[in-house]
Every structure is written in C-alpha cells, then in structure tokens.
Image 1 (tube, rainbow, N blue to C red):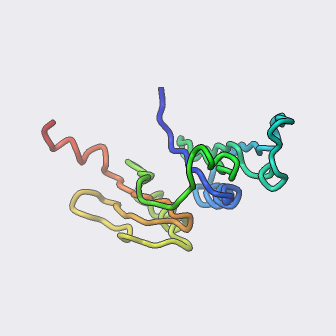
Image 2: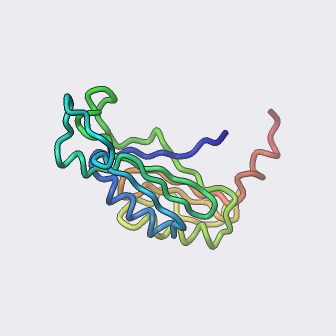
Length: 151
C-alpha cells in the first residue's frame, strides 16, 4: 500500500499541472478530463467543466503527485475548494542541491516562509507556500531527525 499527495483545485488544475511538471522536472505526466469519460444524459456536464482535469499524475524523482479539479457540479457534495494550510508536501532525504533546485522553482510566484539553508537539524531545510497556496517543506535529514527521540 502507498499514500500519495493529491491536490484539488477549483478550475486551476491545468495551470498547476504545467507548473509542477516543469518545476519538478517530471519524468512522466498523464491526465484525463471530465469530458474524456462517458456523459450521463440525465446529468450533463457543462462544456467548461468537461475541459477541467478529472485526474492527473506527475512522476518525479521516484515520487507521485496527483492533481484534479473539483468542478461546481461536484462541489455541491464535496464543499467549496479553499486554499489553506491543512496540507503540506514534505520533500525528505533529498540531496541538498536537488532541494535547492525544487525550492527555487516552487517559490516562484509564492511566499518563502523559511529560506532553504543549513540548520542544526538538517543540511538543507526550508519552507514555502507556492503560488497555488500549497505549502512545501524540504528537509534533507528528515529520516535521521527523529532517530534521536524516544517513542
């Protein structure tokens, strides 16, 4: 079993997908739109919603990031999409140079919370919120950090 990060957007998934594909140097990208699947004639989807991303997958550096839109017809059940700080993507145990590259790309148009730098607990640590409101944390020593603490 695996757990992966899945980001949902209110009509900006296409833009986010292109940004993350470039910034994370994706090795593989797949996507499907709502209009790509059969339509229920009793509940037709508006044309602009048919063009939204139903499901997508980015593979980068051995990781997976999934992205979709939540169109208005679904928000009646799921609730409105809002930016928040309840989700954080943590890049752990990466080479400090790779951390720096990803950090610089993801911070473009975003807000740096803590610049990427050497800290007492990590050779490469930093935090930012990207231009889509997604929080990212980088820690090149994450797996070693908790080893010194008791359960």
